[in-house]
Length: 514
Ligand code: HXC
Image (cartoon, rainbow, N blue to C red; front, side, top):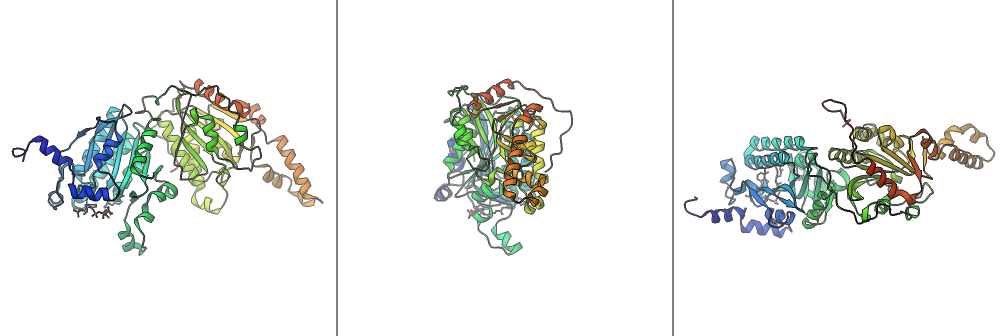
């Protein structure tokens, strides 16, 4: 073939993917092609493609009449994002439906090896019918090779999965093993078995979106950390996220010189957070007040909204933030919130991103659904993650920290480094009303005016137990201050911990309760 046409012609043919008609069909669905996506993602002119001339291994796949099969349905290579090296693979739906055959899989696997060995993030753009049916066990083997690399690279380099079309069958587990999954609202879906199989097995009739659409995975299943209205927005989100992440576990997170004064007072916090314990407020406003220039990149925004996690900068340094959200379910901890926070904490710990924890929670959500769902097991993940983490850990109790939630939320007892509370914070085994109902049950039952007795006992309880000074007197809190000092105090604490090193005991690995 190379004797008849020039290398330029051959290259051009290969870059056409599945050909004009299939590219048109792709555009008609509102989707970009693999190459258009890669070009949008990378700094202009930086993409270097590898393995362009790879063909499917299996003759049946090559000869099924679907046109050009160069690349074997995946565009692979490297380039730069904001001047930093990344490795990229983009499945090409115009070539054999982007399905994952042996050669396709090995291209991704080799690229992941390069990324791992070079210490640069890997970004996968997904648009595929899943394991290539014609290639049988070879395509399953290729999926497995990718999974293994996802696992071995975990905690070494950041791994991002951008789902821009179908992601079906065995293929879903690669994104699921990566650090962050992004999904596009119109065309992305992820499921193990499609609607046809669901119908055949369970007789349930369901459409693609209901079974595995972006809203489901961002909001309910928690599979996706980011939801994007379109591909352009998704790529902007991914770049935004990378700006907080180091390239690998041996490099510090990217510092960018701050424009915000580290000593800036934060008087508005006293207005944002009502003193009355039961009044809701949006903790994202608290974060914006504390963070450099009010900028916060929320992760997993649609999932377990009773806890907020994400990235910000403090005096130019990236930090991970975990905060109870009193606006949703009063900020209780539950199964999903525990999973969400634990995963985020472990990510930050893997990549040396310090954690700031903002505490305002009545505790764990009581009830049969939570107990039967395994809130003990899931809550334990959060404890494990906090206690295991060796990154700098700073916490601030804004208003209340009751019961197990006091311990769980980055307390001193889980190796928290610097722990703060605001002057009106309330730390106790349980809230005053609940405590009085238990401690004063007999008096309340015998009282002529139980409401008056209750009010008096609640006040006594508050005065005696529900304040930050008992914890401070034991050294469980390093300082108690007014909201206006918050930004400065947190930055001072983080600065003091900048070179923190805390070796973990030698062992293979712990056994996090999964
Ligand atoms: C081989 C595939 C393919 C696949 C799609 N194609 N998926 N070829 N293996 N897995 C091919 C189609 O034959 C077609 O080729 C081209 O890609 C475009 O597909 P269409 O069906 O025309 O596109 P569309 O209508 O947009 O539908 C996309 C789709 C559908 C929803 C993804 O193709 C589909 O349902 N595919 C199968 C999804 C799936 O169940 N995958 C799981 C694989 S098994 P032509 O030449 O006709 O254009 C697996 C192991 C399971 O992964 C393990 C579970 C743990």
